[in-house]
Amino acid sequence: MKYIVGTWFAVIFALSGCSFDVTEIQAIDIETYSDTSKNVKLAEDLVYYDPRYIAHKVPSFNEATSQGIKLGYFVRSSDGKPSYRVTYSMKVSAVESNIDSLKSDFETFIPKLADFHASKEELFTNLSPKGQAWASSLFGGSAEDILSTGANLLRETVTAEQLTAVIKGLSSDYGSPISTDFVRAQYYEEFDDFPESVSLYYVQAYKNNRKALVRVSFTQENGNWAVMGFRVEPYI
Image (cartoon, rainbow, N blue to C red):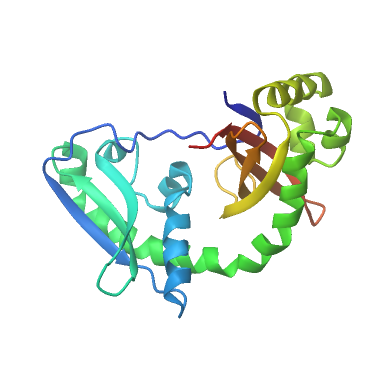
């Protein structure tokens, strides 16, 4: 069962719903760091950015063209260096007719996203312990205490009674966490109706041998970062 509370981006694009018998592959090298292993992790992190945010930055990536696009990353066996990969299905007419614009837009934006993401590394490091503690509090804290540490956006989205029901459901489904490990982060600039935000992801392990992926999302209020929402789903 998934538990979603707060303000979230809607995933509006189907990225894998078509046949890819006739394809073109665009490889964009990720070379932000001098350390290859850090570039590999960076390439992986970039793939998880919300498609709606990507569409905001890549004009040709829209609901029509996304039907024939897969986003991923690849690590070359020869030297271990990564690339961000965009696979285009040329059987989708919107892709075929816009292939030059798509390639140009992705080629321009992805290196910028890589550098921008890397520039937020210190922020991710500073927020990670706070997000980890907040994720753990979902399995032991009261709804009132949890809401008191959140942003106004969170308190406007969910009541204490609703959050209490979510906490009880989490406890029933998963039990108590025995570990909470950080796995990745994302930074979103303000766009459309969404505020500036940071999303932190953790894998939680439980005594019943189950695992969950917990996403804790922060926004800035009065110069401080506060939780505006969270999501818990099974981790496979």
